[in-house]
Length: 110
Ligand SMILES: [Zn+2]
Image (cartoon, rainbow, N blue to C red; front, side):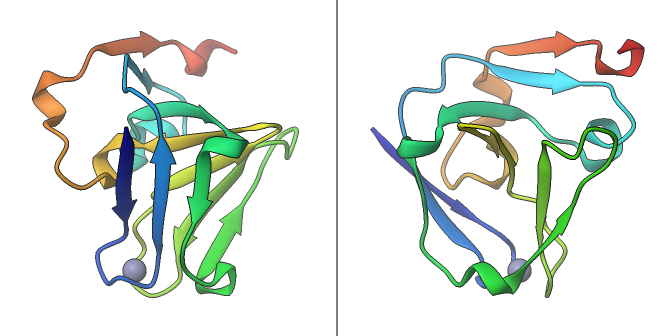
């Protein structure tokens, strides 16, 4: 199925195809404070429907993961990686967060 998501103000909207079999709750220094619940999808299953220029980008360490956020409202709806997109399940519309299969990931120890 296709899931729709985006930020608070509407400047960022996207679609992603697939079933949300699990989400990753990482405890690293960026995922923990941002509250990401990562749902990984292949790049080809992800479509940004709004202007890319509406978003900021933050990278660190290896700079392979691009943490995107809305320049207007600050919501962080996804992270771009090589070949994949980690969609923040919290930014999806109509998804019951409490019903998700949450897998902890110890990114803080990497
Ligand atoms: Zn926004």
